[in-house]
Amino acid sequence: MIEENMTENLDATSLNHVKGNGGSHIDAIRTVDLVRNFGDVQAVKGVNIQIPKGEIYGFLGPNGAGKSTMIHMLCTLIAPTGGRATVAGFDIQSDPGKVRLRIGVALQEAALDPKQTGLEILSLQGRLYGLRRREIQRRVSDLAELIDLGDFLGRMVGTYSGGMKRRLDLAASLIHNPEIVFLDEPTTGLDPVSRLQVWSEVRRINKELGITIFLTTQYLEEADELAHRVGIIDHGRIVAEGTPSDLKKAVGSDLILVRVEGDTLEAMSVVENVPGVQKVEVHVNELVITTSTGSATISPVAVALAGTSVVVRDLTLRTPTLDDVFLELTGSHIEHTETQEDTS
Image 1 (tube, rainbow, N blue to C red):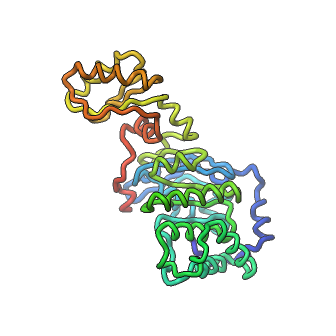
Image 2 (cartoon, rainbow, N blue to C red):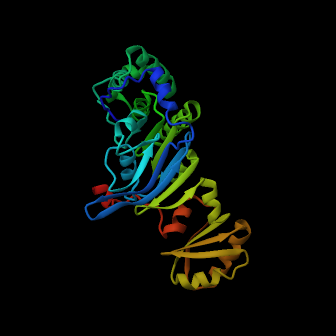
Image 3 (spheres, one colour):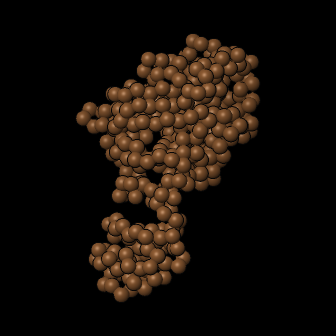
């Protein structure tokens, strides 16, 4: 969450005025050739994105791909090295204060004081944004229902679970009724139940409040479940963009994955001749076979490989995922690895 002492008074009237600023035709987020360098390392390399109001935009990529650098620039926490960007219609470099008034931010590490109650943190955040006491009380009441923390709002944050802290941090980012919310890997480190709860809150604030959400994640299922559109970033560049379904359709209808030991080129040459096989790619010791008739093709593929010198370790059939899209575009899977961007 951003805790800036804003001088503008964001009561209900001024918020409505702010949301009308610039007209409905202005994109929520727009970048033009955005660049960020850390010394000799270029973490973001000329990114162009255009996000309309009311969309959940999933920014997908492995650790170090440039996701966090992008979100830090758009939130005015770091300045671009080159290019430009507007958020809520305002330039992130010439009007950073106006940008901050119109956004909410929940970064990877929730900045929550464990010795404060949830209610105290929400009230403090409201005061930092210049809200009047009555408006804070109304907003806290609305958000308490939204994030469903119940009696825990009156308890010390140090007693919260990881999922509860994430939901409180999300509420803190919403206290001033922002137009856009930035969520930087909001479910990292959470258990499956907590992750589903956070997903539910993200969907709700988008649907019920109409808030635009910029979501960075390295979890494929998260982007698939939540995002209206996905931008895939790799080594600082956007390599694909579209709806999750469209991106997956571009890979093919079914995939047969074969993990082998031995001569992968021999296996590839044999499998290519199997009826129904559209395309075969080799990634280290794995064959990725694209076919429109997976259930009918998997048996002939197994028979063909049985006549070769290779040893088949795994043979599976599934529909494409966003990881397959990433694999198709970059030649590697999305992995949890540390790179220069993380250390920078």
